[in-house]
Image (cartoon, rainbow over all chains, first blue to last red; front, side, top):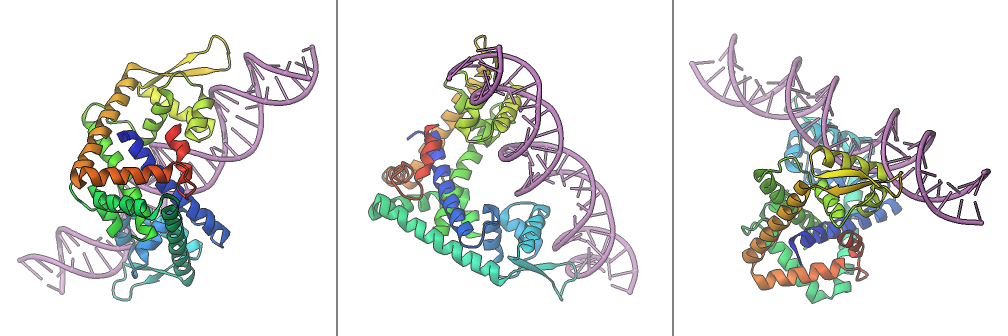
Length: 152
Length: 152
DNA sequence: TAGACTCGTCAACATGATTGACCAAAAAGG
DNA sequence: CCTTTTTGGTCAATCATGTTGACGAGTCTA
């Protein structure tokens, strides 16, 4: 496999996974959620965050993060609340609908993952995941920086 | 590995690879080329293509493909020429600079790939690539559609 | 030759990001 | 305390990339 082919296949695998997930989400009551929203929701899930925190976790400017929150709030996935301890801050929290979406996304991805494992064989799939984990875990190779994304 | 983690690691690996490549390209005389341009150049490389052909290969509208060609032409990577056999068509071909960029990108990706292989061990890396290839080769799993991208 | 199709482009608009400017609130330091 | 600096959030303008829709000019075909 050439370096270029490797890159294309990585992108293709990711894209297919995410496209399949969103097609399923659309069928199950969430037709208007976009891939970027999922990342934002996952970053919000652990607990109330401020816009600046969210921006740092997503690796974008605070303006971009703020707009994403606007969209998610408009669609009913998150809410903003004032922070009684700091009048500058506006805390973002998931709504029940947001939690539902997150749970559903997790289920679907889990199912897609097992379908992939079945398709190529469990052992082969395990070896694939092992290699991918090693590559993206900061082992010093050019794939190392992915850690920030996974850990966020 | 959860399904969500799998998706994040796939994206992370791709992103790191491409970011590293573009950082290196910028250092070596091509600071203004963007990821999307690389895909377009690869689609143009095999020979003169029309805007419509290019659009089909990239999976975008012909308008979008036309704009990408405008940008690439402005940066000196491709040129447009009239087709003497059909006055509607405008053929797009690589310039020497475009061919140079493509060769350089290939070299860099190759080097990044071997660095990754060294970092995690050649056997582990081979198993990883084997699984990735199987998943994205249309084996029936949810990763199957990636084929169109690799083959384009 | 008339109608249908193809190629490229113009215009308007949607999304998601950026930079720069700014105000208000909080923290830090004298 | 009171001034200075830092931080959080937002407004505005802009860029990059994509989309639809419309359309004129050239080619193909029945």
